[in-house]
Length: 436
Image 1 (cartoon, one colour):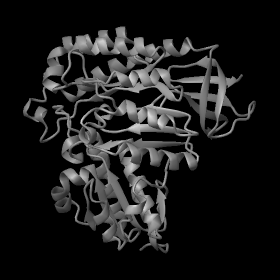
Image 2 (cartoon, one colour):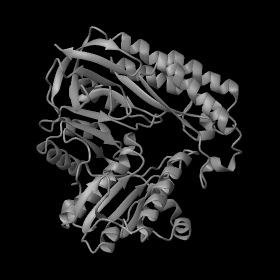
Image 3 (spheres, rainbow, N blue to C red):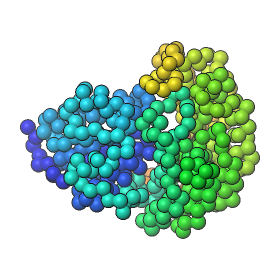
């Protein structure tokens, strides 16, 4: 028997997965707040009558995390700690029928484009005048900024189009207005996100217009940094690099998932590129934007990946020296093109290969960070934690990249401000610094 009183008009939102899911949760919470609901995010739901779980269905580990969360709250509902349980997002979009059969304790399942229907279930109205507005879960000085939804790429391993649909760009004028509202609310950094940011504009304008969007956002008053994520390498629009070089408030930073380097694997992945093209693109980016930080993600253990192809990727990472790098172990996903292939690399070997890549990157990161000691960087101060202020350079995105630590006992900094800091120490993934 529950020992607390639940607030019938209070909603606890749980977000799993990527920053695009977080953006969707923020939009959902903005709509709920406008409908007079009390909303909380990622806190202990001790008195919320309603729980909404925004799930991820990208790869096996993420799917399991989402299922575990649903089961946990389903059990809480059985014990009277939750009155209504709603599941939305990518996993629900992809496996709604199976989930309804396996976890019937959930009151309703919704997909990625079902926000109006979800609100109706709670007797709330979808307020069209709030399109683009949301309740931020990040510190107010930075915000994830979705520029499009869905993806038209045919990558063999990826289930995103199954869950998110075809690519749909948000009109440029709408995005500029959204950025102005965020700036007025205190946002100093926009983190541009999409399934494929470089495809932006093709569906609306008949041509890629990411460079035009970057220029327009760069002109918005009080936006200090604009950071570009999830650029697809094939067909990369060169004019984006010109804007990045010319505009001081566009971070010299690019997140470009490359996935692999072996020509045979790239062809099977249906990436539309080759090792030579990828290597040439990286060289062109570094040539056009001196000092740019490149982040990439790679997949290890793809069906048929040989030890020789893994070693080829190791050699390429060693030569290329990415500033930031992450690795996914291949996940065999139903209804993708690669699902027809035999998942031939054992899980233990996938993990070993991923660890080898990350160990190599750890050494590269240490060398790159050590070279920064004695240099001065502009740093955005994100938070105070323990005895340190913690911030980021323009070369670092929240959650996934390096951080800069400043001793709070010796120095005073304001959260949300930019500060010029001199690096005095370095480790594999963090820098220590002091004000100039």
